[in-house]
Image (cartoon, rainbow over all chains, first blue to last red; front, side, top):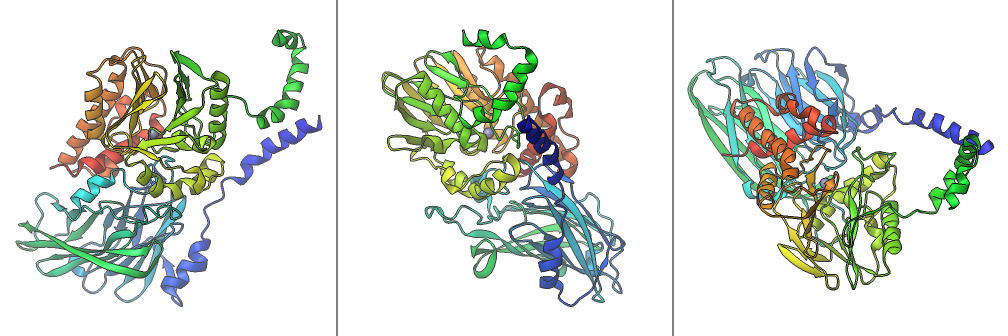
Length: 275
Length: 314
Ligand SMILES: [Zn+2]
């Protein structure tokens, strides 16, 4: 009978442990010091919001949106947005520089989320003030690791870009653009005890988008951006002009260190906008 | 006869005994239950469940084919213990040794039992892309195994193939030939099927799901092309990766083909209209919900994967 009681006790207590993983220790103990040592960060719901699925179907491809709550004016604007996934092996997703020419500091992209984790966005204003917002993502989907489904297809298209601009852009108004980039954005996180397929990380590291020669978005990105990077952002077309995207890639020896990297190629694409 | 005696116990007493002995029975591994579906072909049919901490990932159809000389194991199960139990099933069925372990693709529910069969004389057979997939996903799979399946794996559990199939290969089990075919990217980018010439049985594995919603982790267009090629052929039996034995090929593949075709058409229409991925996952294909088990668990992921593929069409 004692055994019976032990079994019952095990059954009853087991579920109690499982859940509490909404922890912020990585942010508090490492990331905050690393990126913002000595600075104070305010709660940022009035400046930016972050929209991501609470349960991510595919950890390789989690759509997230940064929604700005203020307009980009020349006197007050969001200068920089840093995106982090606390529990990714390399938490830095990207740093996005925006300008008054962006019109609106909204961004959308697809990222890799390795496990249940906070995703956070920290906005830096033109006056240097910092605001943070965060959202929790449960990345599940046991089958698919955070890589892409068809690596060969992605390799064949590497460097190809497509622009899509919302229909009938109104002159002088913030206009939504989508930029699709074909790149496998290889993480380099393969099993490393087998030497036959040592693959270095290979990812897009710099992206610049200009309209009519003026920067509307400048990004520094890393392996947490999904294969085939896909960005949405705003710009203000006040006359006919060229929207030009340019990106470079890099290849690093280790997935989680940027100490030894080799710069790769440069790709560009332009698209005529006629508001 | 023994069972008859056992049944004479009063039910209350019987359950007491069951509770008392349950842990002991678990530690001495039982052979996996297999069914002979055609002459010399044995299948353990899985369950339509998400891989989790209760089933420890043991959900897929796995089994073996017995020749006059030796045995080919086809997929090894969702955890090392299931592999051991499959090995016991082989030993209880035949005296012939295992000479091949064929992994139909990289997914955990098909390869985590591999280590049970690792010994001299056993050749691991896989698609030319299988090793790459194992290496690029392996570390992630190992990290997730404890948390998602409550099993403990190390890199030694991920065994890459030593016999690599680029197109076709014939394996002879002794008066019994298997045609192993490597397919272009479909369910995954490393799908392999096994045709037993003797009984004209096609072990299709996860290129076919029945009951369980098809799971896309490769190429939607590629998968439809593979189906179109295979549905022109005649097979006496087909063994899907998830679902029961098929004896009405090609009719049996129709629900899957319909689902995948619907994804193709609806997602293309959304992309043409400029609908974003995050909105498309909430709009596409919901009418298929009542037709499939595990729809809520996999459908949105399928839409995501297919969308990412189709948005690059010209
Ligand atoms: Zn599968």
